[in-house]
Image (cartoon, rainbow, N blue to C red; front, side):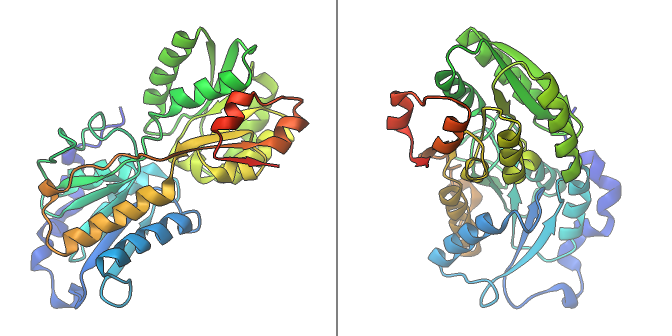
Length: 330
């Protein structure tokens, strides 16, 4: 139900499909990167710093010898196809597509312009590539495996609270990865002998999270695993503060969640993944072919625990978890 089909773009694209014939006013003396994200510019700042660092490693500095045209969906996934169309009105050298939804939309819109996906989940399962080592079409990139790591987060939460037989899964029903998340987590829960209580909410704006969390706090049946939907992850600080306020032991992806009061986070190093994405963008600008750039998967993962939150919840962090933690906030 979340597939973005190429035929959806036929009407929208119109003249944009013929962008190489655009007027000279659309051309730039510097190569142009089109960056498309389902996120907001504000919450993307850290990742953008990492992308720029990767570009600089290859010899490109924004504003000096490369230009970036930005499009932000602000968490509204249905805006992404139109934003792709808008980007294609420019003479792009490469598209940087943040997340699986943006990458699939870009892939459906062009088979000519190189696409580098940034973050997202399993690119084979998402239909972005068929071979990680040698992408065959115009798409390659770097993946965070954020949704794929959901079962590992469940395992860590179970290790923290071994007596909890029920785990609540909180997901954004509007997310393109909602169904995939539920399937993966149900299987993982069965493997661990746990019961999964699914709390799905319709979240389209920031204030919806407060309302959904109020309802969740009243009905949840166990420790909380928050689905790694891009919109929810971008509101990590809000979710961490809400989890602390309602005294809910919870886990999400990144440090921002834990620093705001959440109990735990586990994910690939986002700074490293996006830096690598920046180097891929730079290499394509230098003339590298997509087929020569294998999809990169993360090798560094970070477990962060909030010791203060654990104490406030009356929890004793197991020694085995403490020994594996990359950081314990006290």
